[in-house]
Image (cartoon, rainbow, N blue to C red; front, side):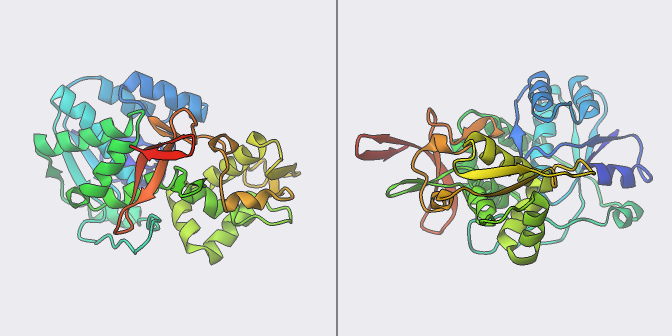
Amino acid sequence: MLYVTIGHLAGTALRKALSPVVVADDNLLIGPSRIGIEDHRAARARYWGNAPSRQLDEHLASGPHDDLYVLLPPTGNGLLTLSRICFRAHETGRAVHVMELAAGTSLALRPGIDPIREECLDTSRIAKRLPTAVRWSSLQAAFAGALWRLWCRPSPVAFSRFCASANDLHPQLANLGRYHAGLFPRRTKGGFSLARFDELILRQLCGDWLTPATVYARAIASSPELGAWLSCTGDLYLAARLLAWATHTQGRIVERRRESSPSGSEMLAWSFRWCKGGAAILDQLPQLQLAPSVTIGGAVAYDPAQPWACRADAAGTPYLVRSAVRGRRESAE
């Protein structure tokens, strides 16, 4: 048997109680993903500058040997990582056993379009009393593997529809669907508006210079919606996104200023503020190319050539469509 933990901290704690253990230390919620192991590893290496989860990739590529025991946290990244493992295990005939780290707890989605806040687990306590391992059937593994296949598609529409319509298959699906849709621009009667995540982070800016660390602290203190998003992405993604806005627009919407940070932290290296008139983009996004693109799974948000857009159904559930504007006629498919 081989145990797979998701996240570095969980791996450190659970190695004291389990063996052998490999750690999936990569947040698949951000950046590109590919179906094949080598293609995925290369895409993640280009994105991060290194290849996270290399040891797990080597085990997944090795063929049908040990059964896989996945210690699953109640997070979107946990579900995606499990789906990736199941995709490969189903191909090679390996059995997958799931150990739910928060078994018995309910996932209560509040009304709205934002994901719920992810809570940190007490892994040291879990290590003292490990959850029961449940062997998944080949059908369960195939369904989970299908989720990974949809995540890696260049079109995000099928993944979005799956999360919106099949959330009874796993408690994290609806939450993952909210997160996924919230990284794409929204369709409005007049054209487009910012993705939900971009709207939330840019609303924190003002005419004063703010570092990402300050924005993060303000979000945790006074913006529970953005705080929930950052619990999914991590704080460094906030810094990366603000920097992307400043460099992509060359200071025409968001300005940046180099700070003297002795720590070298990305959260303190730059400060940002609105350029004069830049805040108007919060009301309307005149052109998709004004926003820096976002790679998520196999798709790209804010790509004029593939204008994926977020809409909401009658119940308020967000989902994605491919939008197009032909002259004055709008269409969505």
